[in-house]
Amino acid sequence: MSKLLVTGGNFLEGTIAVSGAKNAVLPIIAASLLSGEPIRLDDAPDLLDVKVMSEVIKSLGASVERDGSQLKICATNIDNIEAPYDLVSQMRASIVIMGPLLARLGRVRISHPGGCAIGSRPINWHLKGLEALGAEIHMDHGFLDVKAKNLRGTRIYLDFPSVGATENIMMAAARAQGTTVIENAAQEPEIVDLANFINQMGGKIRGAGTSVIHIEGVREFHGTVHTVIPDRIEAGSYLLMAAATGGDVLVQNVISDHLKPVLAKMEEAGIEFNEEDEGIRIRGNGNYQAVDIKTQVHPGFPTDLQAPFLALLTKSNGTAVVTETVFENRFMHVDELKRMGADVKIEGRSAIVQGTSCLYAAPVTATDLRAGAALILAALTAEGTTEIRGIHHIERGYERIQEKISRIGGKIERVD
Image 1 (cartoon, rainbow, N blue to C red):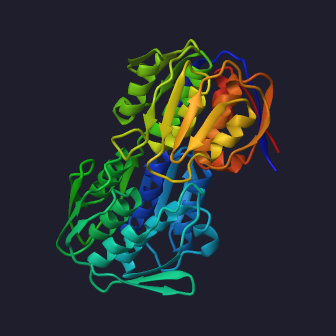
Image 2 (cartoon, rainbow, N blue to C red):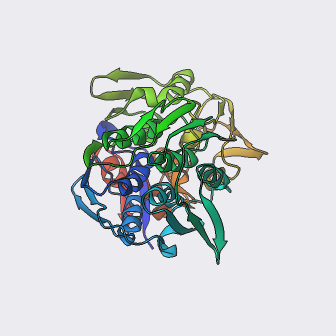
């Protein structure tokens, strides 16, 4: 089993480039099913999740080729309505093939998806939205069997602004008859990127990035070339790592507007940073004040950066309260951080973090993707060499992370 060996105490200095966004490229790959013409995606990160999603649409009849940071997709001959269980079970994001495949072929069969065990994340909002568009849904031996002879535009109110549900409904409605309005829609930057991609193929979506999205259905989609937005979670993780180690690091390929709540909390904690033409420069000193954090749906503080920020707070001055409102099981990294000397107590959906002067190396396990980033951050500041297992979670969302950190002076090694 592979693991990372991370030795703490090194001063990070230099430039680190952010890859394309994992959470943007996955639904965009699925949306490629709407068109039968060639698609090219630039800045597509080479990640485990991207490989899985590529295999999912290949199983349906599409062709996918990687050329460096480009993905070339052609979904001319889609001839299968069922996504294989062994692929879908690996990644929750595979559920977003429902919308475009239903729009393209009128039917899709898919099992309940897998992914990180950070919460229940029900898919009922996806199903209610597709039913409102005219789909019929049946359970068949563990599979969802979704059929629709004619999808028709309608008004849909989401009880919760689910990103995945918003994406699935957008893709299905893009080819439906008439106009669909999604109220209480997710507002994440990845939603905007998906809408821009669909519009580049000939779709008619407006309002993405707000709580109300209007989709006018069209029947034909053409090919296009699209550049995936930078990964705001990867960017935030590297900013926090640079700050925690007291580094002087320029994080390139960042859209600062995507990180407003994170940058605001960094400033509140006393972390010095400057926005430059090429990115955001961190000049850390390792001496920061405790700040309270409450995760929320966008544009609030992102749940995906809760774990890395909590890891930084374990070495802050004072006591911080970190409240998780999005996922009910996203403090699994706390026990691993405590093995390294962190002083953290869980009370309901909050973590009470008492800053400490020293973390020390210990064998730890990444329990999910963002927990892995938190453990790397902690290990970079700890005394000794930390052994991190479960790195397949990390490789789902961080492209060449050990290579990037090594380039700026971090001592990190992947051992098979």
